[in-house]
Length: 239
Image (cartoon, rainbow, N blue to C red):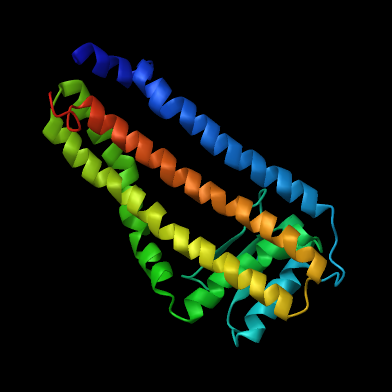
């Protein structure tokens, strides 16, 4: 097993390639390409209302009685996010000033997070509390598992797996948060008259594609965790 563990360390273990690397590239790459493709397509389709993403986010929040959230521009492609610590909604330039179906979809989605925050949505609160733990688990857990694998110490791998599982927990909790924000966005965009009936399909396609990236992250983290557990013998009954 020592040679296989060492091979795993240098990422040339054929099991790693087949079980983690290739599926990871396919899943994450496919999700990323889908997001970029749909965003590009629906960035060229202007809404009838000609309301910008920033305006759409503002309207969605005002309809919910939220007046204490600041909307700012952020740098980078699809760098849109809502920061519950500062009550700041940040939109990338194209979504801040754009009036496309894609722009208002993303903006309303982020406004959906502001709605969750205002209403005390439990999964959002849980996700926020897990951020430091997930960061710790990601940085430390992986290396502990790797060291345990090289040392052929299944107990060390198990400790690392426990730490790394905090990342998986964070990603799993993120799923309902993101799906709920998208559901809120779809409803609010239509109810506020920001999108027309024929534009609903585009909104759904943009937001559904974005949601798949979070699903892909869960799958890839799970595959990596299972790889270490299997290689350490913790999943092999005859080891």
